[in-house]
Length: 125
Image (cartoon, rainbow, N blue to C red):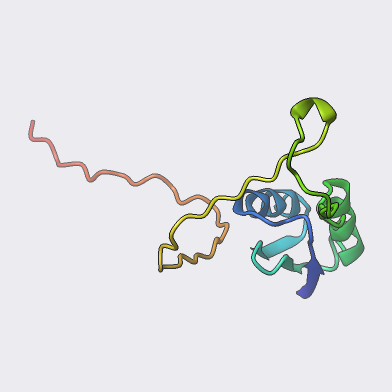
């Protein structure tokens, strides 16, 4: 078993984690995928006889997850007196009170379990 850790800058939300895991689990030889949108990395355990780190990176790159995210830069000009017609965006800031709690979870992809069977009672004839 071989392991590789790949930095995935475009995986910044949980729905990206689900998609990255789906993409990588489609590659023959991939055994486990642990992805974190908080850290922007994915750890992959794979069988080197069936695939390689280069193949896995190429799959992520083809899906657009290895490219850097564009970061908007403020112009420094005041936003007053601008309209939607002039093609400029208005700055809008809102704030919500912090919830004071955090939620963390880990996802694991496993083969689906067989459906439960109900016990049958013997019938008397």
